Every structure is written in structure tokens, then in C-alpha cells.
Amino acid sequence: MKILFKLFLIGVLVFGFIGCSKKGGGGGNNNPPPANQTISNEEGSTSTNVIYGYVIDEAIEEANITIFSLDGNILESNITTDSKGYYEIKIDTLPNEYIVYSQGGKINQEAFNGELFAYCQEKSCNLTPLSTLTYQYANLLLEGTFEEKYNKS
Image (cartoon, rainbow, N blue to C red; front, side, top):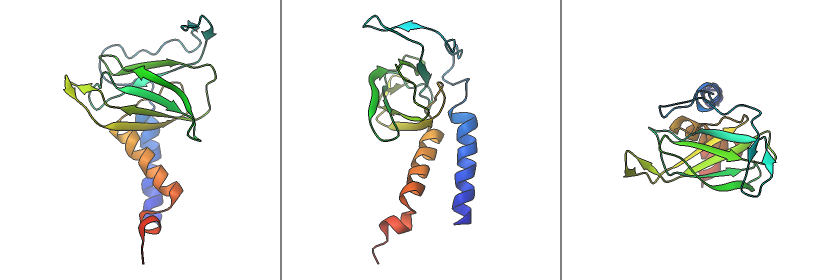
């Protein structure tokens, strides 16, 4: 059990430095929008809360992005990444913690049928294989160990 705890701590540290880094990936301009930028949405109202980041295992374009609260409610959906894997979501109320989920897309014009996840606490949130591994590992710990969950004896 001590090994699992150490692996979890390492995963959290790595996720914190890489998965939610402010720089992002996918090449090109990695500068985020200004933190207090006011953006008008389709309805004409304004929002100062923007969640943004990259979906990368190389740049994953045309990935479908959904934002979930920690209790599983959809906060925003129907957002698609651009050719550099960048997404930006205007949201009325920025939660303290949330989950970003990515499904599908293209890598180098080839279909990508995978899913990526990330637990996020900042406006900048990148989805990577490492953030997905950390998400899955944390869920496993919260739901019990593999042996506890699947032991049939």
C-alpha cells in the first residue's frame, strides 16, 4: 500500500507540473488569453471566466471537449479543438475543481478514437496521456484498490 501511495504522490506532482502547466503543448503560440479578459458569447452576455488548454499526444484537432463538475454534472459541452489541439471555453461560473474530457479527433489527419481526461483547478488545463493516467489512478484510489474492487473470493 505504501508503494501505491508513493506512486499516487508522484503522479499528482507530475500532473501538477505537466498536465496543468501554463505553457501547454501542440506547438505554435502557447500564450493563454489574458486572465481577466472579458469575452462576449453568442447570447450577448459577457463572461470573464475562460477555461483553456491543449489536447495533446501530438496536437489532437477536432476533439470534442466536455467540462464536468466533480459530481458529474455537465458544465459545458460541444466545444471542438483547433488544428493545434487548443480549446477555449467561456463559462459563467468557474468552479474550484472540474474535469475536462476529450473524445475523438485527429492526429496528423488520422482518426483518433481515444479519450483523455484531466482533473483541473486552474483556468489552464491540458489533456495528455499523463493527465489521463493520473485521473484514472485517482479514481481507482477513491473507489478502492483493484483487488478490493474485483476480488471475487
